[in-house]
Image (cartoon, rainbow, N blue to C red; front, side, top):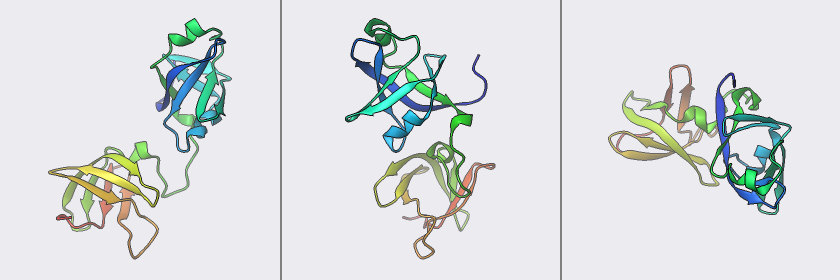
Length: 168
């Protein structure tokens, strides 16, 4: 039995060799961060002492008890999860994307803009995708006082306040 919440961190995308190694598509940023978790949940089973590494452009992993290609093939397409308590504790005012998705967004005038459905990584800054009456793309800027767009995040109440005009 798996206790506590689970976090999706990747999926099995294929086999690597004949000794049960798996190709992993990582949802972590950077991709290699998935290799820092030594216990994974795949196909509803907990695998402790996971051996994983970057191999060229790939992330590959060896799960205990998966020792041949035929067994490994049965896991293709399965989600790779970890227990929530394995996540690194972030400093205050920093959030995992998964914590922001689903927040109700209002501007500083109290006008509802919609709900965060996803985020985009652009290089300069992340961008919130907010769907309400229409879709809005709002830069996730918290540091710069002159261009700050995110004013407050309240995870307990599942809300975010932004400095953004309702017509933009």
